[in-house]
Image (tube, rainbow, N blue to C red; front, side, top):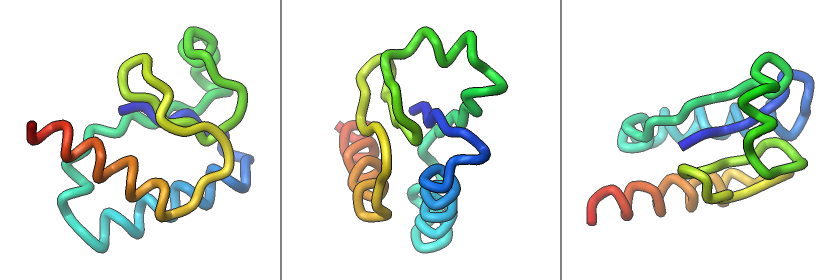
Length: 87
């Protein structure tokens, strides 16, 4: 799973904080391979994905979420990922 973000984006900072909270609440979320891609530092890679707003989650080439996000939405993305992994 990939997470595109920007260091100076307030929505991204909040999303990263919620991800850390989820990691602390339940260790199962730490098993999710989350590649965090800072868009301005890896712009060539970011340009190969179809999105406009950050934070943006992808699983492979499938966009899971784009733009402002809630902790509950991140948790659902993580839970869905783990459910698919266990099939």
